[in-house]
Length: 255
Image (cartoon, rainbow, N blue to C red; front, side, top):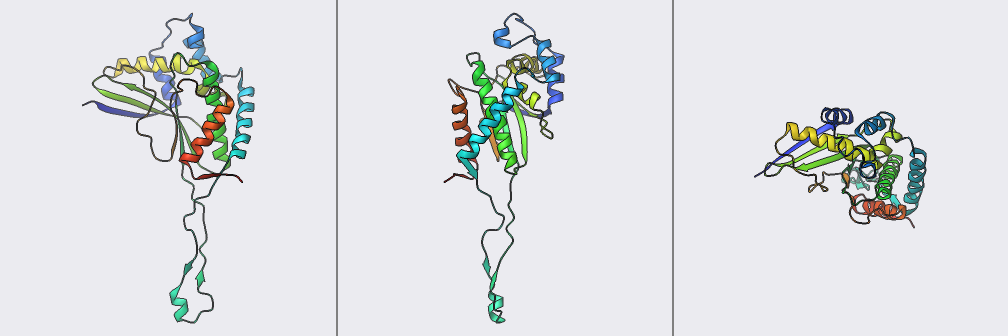
């Protein structure tokens, strides 16, 4: 029976481990990797600045579309009034007691798998990143406290699985860094592969990456790896986020 190893890292720790065993093979395959390891490291330090303005613009457009598609219902700690029998016995004229209704909003975890296979196209990765950024803004504006995490996980042959939850700093949210982590091939295929190299050196028999988390934690909106033609357009991304809100949060369509 294999073992399950789970770790929680911050982004700085993730990058530090990647630097210990950099994956810089096949430097000429920029179409696959997006750049060299040094390019990936430099982009982490500065954010992927090339297209951040467009990324933010597209995320805002998708945010506005989400506001038209869905409305989040409030959850109440106490719903309704109650009847005070004691007041009847005392002859009190008002027997209905009104309790103050205080909205209770749980912390929502947004968990994004950072792996993707070689047949996934660049625009699909970009559209998925835009969708996650729009969701972060949508839930934040609705008053939900958010916890944004990246996920990377591997099989370990007969030894089980390894899963790393990487906390993404969100107070304040660095839009350049978010764009880089969610939409750049370099982040996963250079830094992620390098992290994998570090795991191979420090853990038993790391084998190959996984694209799914079999058990999703409570109050978590989970984004697994892209498959097939998912996120082929921003309209597709909009439909996927709307469906996610409808199925995993208390929502209803606007009238």
